Length: 314
Ligand code: RUB
Image (cartoon, rainbow, N blue to C red; front, top):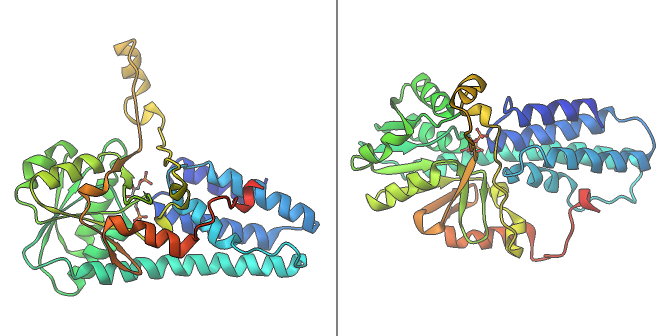
């Protein structure tokens, strides 16, 4: 295993590197470094590449940006090429994925910003670079609005969001997760990111998102998801369910407190699934779609070959 890949994998697992978009880009960066630094035969190169890819894919199973980053880099890889060409090709595609991710987030910001109007009150959850791109772009275009950030237990990514918004000069309110319904009647929009979008338009995002969308639906507040096309999950076309990562209970309660309480099971799912009925639109870098059109994105990006195995699996 490559030292740098192990390091990146560890950082993804312990969330030093977090947020689906960044996870995808850091995966690409790690593969690029692996290709640059590898010395050995072509056979070893391919064997190592597969091993390293498999290792990365298993670090955070819900974020499809990770496997889609690898799919993008290794798509149409011609193993008949000589090692130098193969390497160069993979390096170029890794760089291209990073570029593509950054420009998609910018584009989503531009497209999504049009949906924000002066005077809006917007609620968000967790810390999504895509959702923030929409909000910040609207602000930079001179729109005047206010944001309510849920703190997002147990890791408090909402604090990062609130901090980022304040730095930008945007009017920001920080609320506890359970205060969402209390404030929802005053909201105009909910804007969130995604870790994965399924073929039926269901959106997987930070735990609590589905409850937020349900509350918004009840209050007739529109829910906008900001997601690049590499967050769409190709395997869901064939009916595969998206794996929901369950993280260590120590993120929820201290060891000391747990011991004090005694026989208690602490559960810590990191994500949940919001059904398409609770989502009004998805802003992608290719344009705005209804959740029901997710299948079209998947068809365009990944085709219909349901039997196709990923390079790292064969
Ligand atoms: C982050 C999270 C974000 C999505 C989208 O979860 O749920 O909403 O990843 O983020 P975690 P982005 O903190 O567990 O990684 O738009 O930046 O890809």
